[in-house]
Each structure stands twice: as structure tokens, then as C-alpha cells.
Amino acid sequence: MDAAARQLLAEGFVHNRARMIAASFLTEHLVVDDRRGEAHYMKYLTDGDWAQNNAGWQWSAGCGCDAQPYFGIFNPVTQGQRFDPEGGYVRRWVPQLARLPARYVHRPWAAPAATLRAAGGERGIIDGFWSSSPTDRSPHPAAVPLPERGSPTPRRGARSAPFGFA
Image 1 (spheres, rainbow, N blue to C red):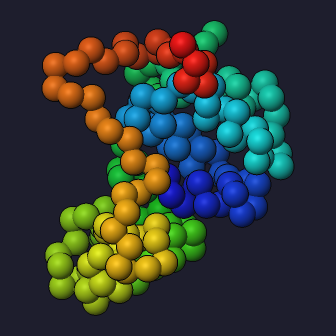
Image 2: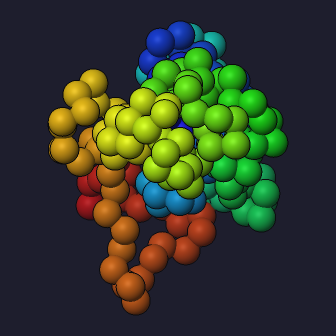
């Protein structure tokens, strides 16, 4: 997700596979309304086509005119390992992970502490890789709190109020 987000902002383009993985992660894992992602991508895409962008985000969220909810959930780690096995795409766009061995580039949290230190320091890679300062202990700006255990969760394909407005 980080690599796709950084490429989008830098180039105004993201390969379709990375778009689908990012859309799936945002809508299915973080349960963010697909219209927020659709609007964000449309704002930055240089090749943005309103109809295709809109339909792609609806497909990822499991809603829309051709919803097939069983296809739209991607495991970002598995997708990265399958389509970027050496981590070249991730290494290019997330330089903080560039020195990690290929087996950990898609899941740096699983790397042993010694591997993290050798690749640039434990704090610098896992807890603070979005920061240029290894002493910065502020939370990740995109952190989303998980719902408490037993709290109701939206059903798949259900939309929340648009753009956070009730």
C-alpha cells in the first residue's frame, strides 16, 4: 500500500495490480468508504477515467453493478510475494525497506531484530519508517483504530455515509 500511495503522488500513475491491492486494503481491511479512495485516486491520476475509476473502486468494495464480493479481497502480503517476489517495486517506492532481504520486504514485522538492525535499525524500519527521524515516536499518520471486540462491523459492500458525513 505504501509503495502504491507514494507512486500515485509522485507520478500520477499506479499499475492496475497495485491499484486493486490498495483499493481492497482500504475498503475491506480498513473498512473505509470506497468513494473516499475513488475521489483520492481521481484527484492524482494523470490517466484517470471517471467511469473506470468509479467502477474499479465499487468492485473492490463489493458493491456496484457487477459486484462479485468473493473476488475483491486481496491479501496484500500474498499479492506482493506473488507479483513482486524480489520486492523491486516496494524497494523503489519505500526506500526505508530497500535493504531488507526479499523474504521480509513484504512483511518487515516478521524479520528478526538482527535483520532489522542490519537493514537500517529496528525503529527506523518498523515503528517509524514514515519518519525521517529515528527518535520520532509519534503514531503513524494513517493509523486507523480497530473496532473493539464484539462491536458491530459493516457488512461487506455496505457503504458508510459519504466522506465521513452522517
